Length: 233
Image (cartoon, rainbow, N blue to C red; front, side, top):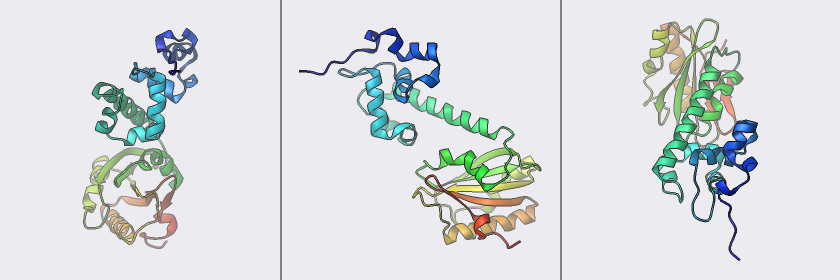
C-alpha cells in the first residue's frame, strides 16, 4: 500500500506551522516546522514539514545547513535557487543577530567570555578564520573583525593588518581568535610564533594583546592561560 501524505493545507489548523507560530509563538515550533515556514511548499510524496525533516537530518541540523554551500543545497530535491536563497538569508540574519546581541556592550573578563562570544559560529567553519576582538579601556567589545581566512601562520599573517581597527578605534586592548577546522584546539608551533609576533607588535603600538584563543569543536585553548606565546609575568 502506498504511503499516505497529507498536504500542509489539509492538516487541521492547529497543526499548521504558520498558524501554530501565530497562536503559540515561534518557540513552540520544532526545527522542521520553522524550516517549513521558510520553504513554504513540499514535493510530490512529501509535504513541506517532511521535506524539512529530511533536509535537517541529512545535512546535520542548522549547523549543517549553515556549513553546506549554496549549490549543494539548491540541487537537492524540492529546493532550487529560490528556496535556498531564503534559507541562507534566514541563517545569516540569525548569525548577525546573535553577534549583535552578544557584542552589545559585552564586557570581557576571561577567556571564557571570548569563547562564549565566538565559539558557536567559529567551531563550525571549514576553513581557518583569524578574528580580532577590539576592546575599550573597560574591556568592552568595540568591534570584531575577520582579518584572515586560510592558513594562520607567520608567513601568511601580516601583523600590522591585525591592528588597523585598533588604531582607528583607539582601542586599549585586543584579543586574537582563530579556529582549527580539525576540531583540535591545541596550539601548533606556528600558532605560538604568530602569538609572540602579535604581542610584540602590540607593545610597540601601545595596544595590549590580552590573549590568543584557538577554537576547536566545542573546546577552546587560551594561549595566555597555557603560558605560551606571551612573555612571562
